[in-house]
Length: 561
Image (cartoon, rainbow, N blue to C red; front, side, top):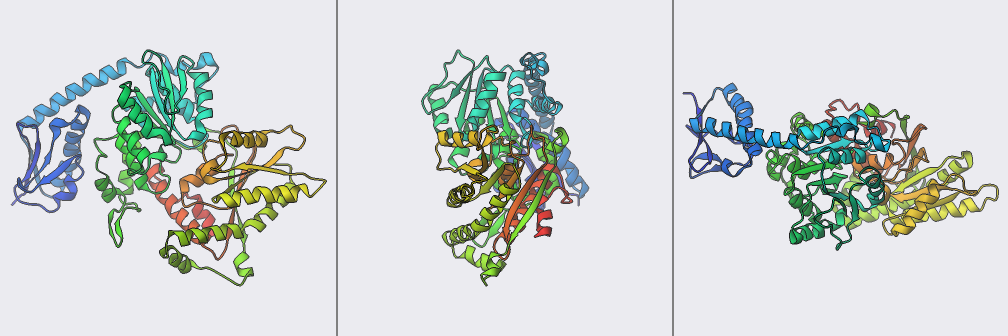
């Protein structure tokens, strides 16, 4: 007997999917439909389609018609619809067409050339990105790699719709860069650096810059004053990767209430595919509304020994396809004529020399003993690299006139490196290297002084070395004055490491760049880089559709290790 799935629109505008007999396989298939829940009392699956916006409702019908129905028919089932379904789908299509016509009517004529009077000619990928965003009704992601001009692309998108109220969430370190570009390319708007109190007047064209740390406060202020932005732009949108974080909750709550949303990130997956959910929820809420459903389908979500686990990747081709629908992706090698970037491994044999080794199982045991114990282990291994790293830096300074950017993970190690390089460098009268730097503990004023001193090229004794941590200096800095980088300590995040590397390898760089990784053999470094390789493999599959590891730079490093 042929099984039948009857799809009916009830008078209360509930869409009911009722099988003739219970079909266990339906759970996974119907789980693809947004907001579809099983009702045991009705022995049916139900979608409250009457409460949905036109676009979301049409998405439900599209998935049923173009995904669920063919899948079931391929398995020998029959799918039937009542007349009310067809009538409702047609009415939603009419509403959606009206909304689309209204949206396109507000697009400014000649926006592509609107920057020409300011002496700026956008790259083709920037124009293509804005067209992509407009085709998606003003909700999407610019997944452009670091140094490809995402800031200009976002400003151009705002000009394309003639937006007068713009709210931009950014890491605090990027405010200066954004202010400069906004004052240059959007001079018709007042730029406000939100300090927790200042808020724009309703009759003014404004851009409000808000650090992610202030997200909850600005959300509450908007609720209080009732003056809402037309668009929310999230620069480095991977900052809202954790659904439980207060800043993510505040940004998502606010962004769902505005007509337009734009996320910017060269590394939309900073750690694992689960990081994508909040920004997908904002760009395609009709498809990505249920975190558990998303993680079960795409992140190998399952109950583990210590709770729910979702740190993997499943159905990678499907997730890549979904991401392509909302993200305009550009890699640097596709749009910029940049010099090469190579990586080298600097092996250290400290532990063998001391007669002590630490293999993979020791590290697993250390992790199981608790976070504090493992943190101490990481600090110890980082500190053990100090002497050899300083030796390498001093040798570098003696053998070349180039500048060097150094990244650490621990604040104490960064401070000690600065002090040691300065002490040993100043001891040589014929050569005086100067190291400057900053960490998350450094004030904004002192941070800017260190960066300016490093970027100076005409001083008698210029700063040759800039030392910082991945957390405080890994994003937002333009350090093309250097083409050499030393990574003393890596983090567990692929996105963070790629962001750090591209402080020197970005638009404006004219010289080939080399990234040197200091790796202590016989330590947890070996496990860390194996983990980075695994994470990058997942990231490349989802973001770039790379299923052959061609883009996995950490896999190449593992071979060298």
